[in-house]
Length: 332
Image 1: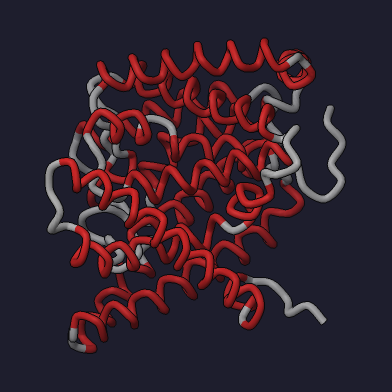
Image 2 (image 1 turned 60 degrees about the vertical axis):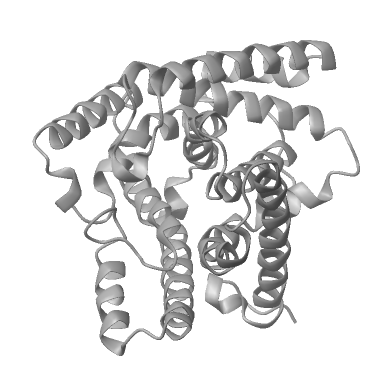
């Protein structure tokens, strides 16, 4: 297995690419690109989180995630309230929605709906922790999670269940896959790919990219936040795994480059960017949404770079002056 010094480069780069795709996908991009990105960008984060699963660190992880969830949720809600001149009642209603996990429809957080991923990840980690001592449990538990989620959706319960439990059930198989990457024969195959040459990795990336694009096209738009897996649950998982490993293997290629530090930095700060970028988009859209036609695509690119610049500046400020908001200690 790969020795962990401080960080694993391909993981940080993968998350960096992933958060860029999250921000890009929340802009007014063409449907064919949206279907492609939405088919795997959340499974990618879950799979990488599973790779770093440590049962003994569950309590510390959950405390840190909750700290990020509430601090970013409260800050964006306050700014959004003042920006739109909403009443204090709106803020308290939004706070209640946060306490219920920020799920889609009934519990959606107004200024930062992407924070749903944090509560879903907490549920996923709890499932993994509770089943960790059961031998060979990952695949059976994953099947049970999928079946439970489909039943809840079938009877229209998913919109009323808080804490994003249903999306978490759908995403748990990707977390299991991340855990399996460190186990026995799966680990051997993963290491062989990681240690292979540029050509082999590049060919695998092209094949996986083509497969993800084709599958996502036929499966239609996926939105796990809304418990919508497209036309087929099978196609959803095929695209999710293909796209996730496409990014991971591509990141292994990029990790050989010394000039890739910006992507690594994004990967280390995904939670902050995920929490604040939608508020920035809501404000920026008022200035960029007037473009149409060819200029519309220029506006999308311009808005994307602006959002990433502002998100990065805010992230730097938080990390330097208020790391406690993210459950970190101030560096002496």
